[in-house]
Image 1 (cartoon, rainbow, N blue to C red):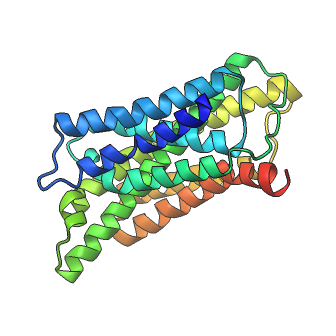
Image 2: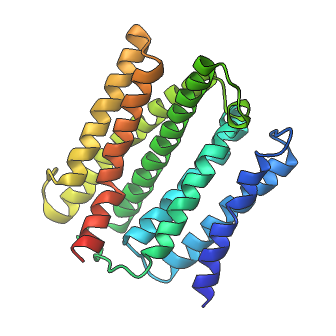
Length: 265
């Protein structure tokens, strides 16, 4: 009963932050920060209480970890970026949807945490993996914002959403910074994953679906950053590549859990 109340509360806590950006004159003020911190606190408390009772590895947990990581990263980045907070009206509905899916698949069977790797390595790998997915999620949202702003400019029609979102240039600046961060963290994640695997099996690499998708994302993001700094890839090309990278990472992270825990579970 207590866990059901916590997860519903965590889901409802996402709503005020979204509504704060729909005010007549939305801004990064006390109202926005209060609403966003409520969302962060709600998701973190639920994840902490859920995992403190025993480590869960199922799809529902993966989705809630994604929600919590995205909110925490979004809050931290928004504190230092004048434009990042403007992604909130796109990010929060997506995270709300993830929360709904997490509740729907709450009772799905879970695969046990395999291997005999040291707990510190496993923990580090989980943190790095979730952080990578959170950064790529935010990058995908920034890419979508840039695409929507471009569409609005071409149509010469300004909407309520386009007035809130960052400009095309602002969205692309956020996008590049997030991609650089995610590339670094993803590389660290692959190293920690190899170390964890070596500790438990004596092998450095196993080419399963998750590993292959992660390597593809590393290559795609690296190629996009190279193209950006070399020739200034912008607009639709950048958006398509970022969304492709996000699709690959989604297939590699919660996608694998969906197959193993639900379709095959």
